[in-house]
Image (tube, rainbow, N blue to C red; front, side, top):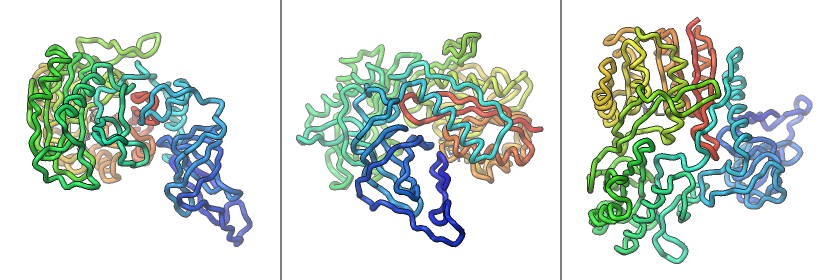
Length: 500
Ligand SMILES: C[S@@+](CC[C@H](N)C(=O)[O-])C[C@H]1O[C@@H](n2cnc3c(N)ncnc32)[C@H](O)[C@@H]1O
């Protein structure tokens, strides 16, 4: 039986056995603890191991290749199971000491060079095996500028500690409702950590409680704490703090006063309060009120460049963009690496100055605005209206007059856009993890651009989308992974397809 890095496992019967001999593979029970040796890492980051003589595949979280682990089976399917490592019986020779004692950094036990190597291999594997593509150049992965403290946005949850005290941190892995308190989040900057400490101190002093969705409804006179969202303008040094609660009363002015006193008005750009009655664990939606300062976070982007010595973050600042990011708009969570990612997209677009470019799934228009200075005209499409408003405002602020943005569903908007703007020469897409539906790819094919620059956060969805374009007459020319998220299995990729 073969197993793909995406978890595609062969069938259970007959693998490696004579025709007609139905062999039942040994399978562990749900909840059972089993010993396994990890062979490889799957897309998404779980370890891959085989159980019993039949080679039943088990995906194991919390383990790396070479580990011998004791794991508990959390989900069992016909041809594979998911398990969680509960004990490392014999560590892999590759293992290194973890430095962050919090969730979200599962790959910190691998040396950084090895993380880069695995990410590049996974991109190659997805394109060749899932997409059945070849003949492309896999360019060297762009390593991260900073291996720690690189995130410009952290979403913390409030919860109750073992002693009943209010805590602020992250949910434990494995869909657990328990919140692991955090003292120093090594993905956040030091100033971002201080902002969280101030908010937690304020909440404890006011005697506020966390909302427990298992026990309480959202209708309450006193607001219960849900999340704390801290965003940072890495190039401006500004911080935005947003408290998310259930509906009710809370003295958010006092939180703002505490943050101003601790961080100062040079650092703090705004304090916001969102009341949300959503039942799901989300910081989107609800009613947001500006408590102090500005509603939008100021940030500046300098597009990255490749110099003779390799990749550097200090792109030409004349090409920089002044941005104001709304609290709910998508913005790449690693500013320094977004600059390099956009640098690759710019290079792949090979613009000469006359082209019509579409930027589909454009968010706050950062890629579109980066390309606009080198293109004839740029048209951006994005679902979230507030992000589109941010993009339009950013175009104005940066004196970019050849970029237009529309709120709409990229799945439906293409025919109308073509009618209005004319056919594109270059199409840039940067969809969410699920990638593009076959229908959207067909619409791009109908639009017939010379070049498609595909920015992807998921090689397993990039691969079939690229394969569909190749089938229709485009060639996958080159692909460059960019490491936006060190210590995690997440991969960002830029791919260039050209019409033959
Ligand atoms: C990965 S983000 C990329 C944003 C932007 N290119 C950037 O670099 O910041 C994907 C974006 O697609 C938007 N989106 C999701 N589904 C969409 C759809 N059906 N039509 C248009 N935009 C969509 C999301 O709101 C989000 O802003």
